[in-house]
Image (cartoon, rainbow, N blue to C red):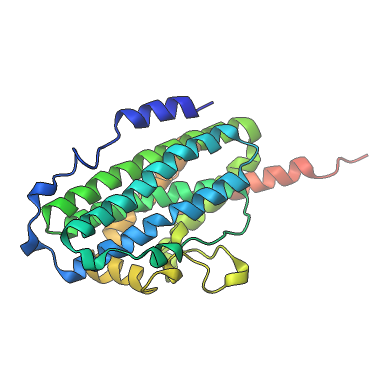
Length: 285
């Protein structure tokens, strides 16, 4: 069981909203309304950890270890939303999300294969780590720069915890886990080929609600994410390259094989799928 160890390790580095955020260093001259609006949107997006947790608990009923870890992940993710809202409450109260705006990103996700969902969220943590680091660089106000840095470090730690559960799955279920992780790894490391940012909050998750079934589509401004990345924080090709490199690096560690490109990871995926097919084929009489 990984939960006790992960709980202890994350507890040791947990930050305090009162003691570790330098609220007294706020500089009003360095915060624009445009920047405050992006903070509001990130606060609402982080609130979607609530329906994600409900999904994880539903789809992993047979895994008490992972479900117990959700208590830590959910607490820390909701804390991200809370610290962003606290920042707005103190310094730009007119931008604090309403309860209705928060409620709007809580909706049911359709059931999905648990291993693929785990891998998708692992990649999502890597991407969020880089998005928030980039956002910290873009902002000029000292307190919010610090907040984004702090929550980016949390996202990196969460990715590390998910990786531990992925390694556990390789031991327990073998090639089916390899195939699931490689499949989603190829998808999530191929963002340059898509028209939208690849992150769990921007993927369709409820067929009955389509097309209004992504977290981003349910924000007050559904077009916000692309504008934030492309024209505000300037999450450019260099940043995207860092995301892809981290995904490939972790896939190399997970599978004990070096992947320098997405194409190499995709070839590995086909190799695993072929092996599964050969093993399940009827044996000649």
